[in-house]
Image (cartoon, rainbow, N blue to C red; front, side):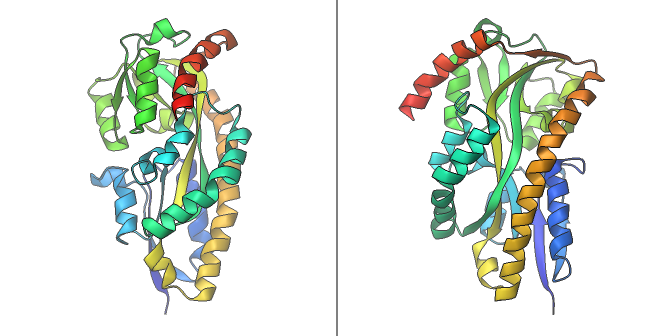
Length: 287
């Protein structure tokens, strides 16, 4: 008899994360009965609820941006250090070489979760309803939505912003209520959440290369047969490569779509980037 497997995410049907999840389902559905809650925030749950729901086995498998795991594993703040990594490949290599085993062991031994892989959560840029963010002066006094990562919050405060950390559910509402001047997100979220409706100035800052953790409840996984475990791990491995390739392709396509929304796009100069890096460096050294 097939086992039931419950999967949940927090993004819409056009998201690469949703596409990757559907691909994962295609690979396992011959052996499992699968239910998939595509976007938990549409059911009035915060995106961060995915972690707890997966820990207690209410959901068996989920994915979520690494920032939401920093309360469980503080060292994950490392991944959100603005202007720390030189490129996306650099970030992925450091993540896999320096942190993968540590994160996997922390999740498994302490938090009742098993790491299935890392997903590309996009290169993060800054948008604003007021101006481009081409200099530190442009940051002054602008209310910006940030991730819940404390290090992230403090760094953006040092840039001159007024940080407002919000879960995805609250972020969507804040956009509708016009409570934000700026936000920082990958292009996929800028489009998925229709930020372009209210924030027409997009500055390509590439300040963070984001990751999602793809996870399964340990108790659920331990209860699977050897063949079922093998199918889950092999399917996850395939989907991790599929997701990253899809994410890279999506970024190029999204820029074309954004220009059709009358969004003005600027790119942070190397001179300005170095000034941001100088401030960020103090937090990097502390960390």
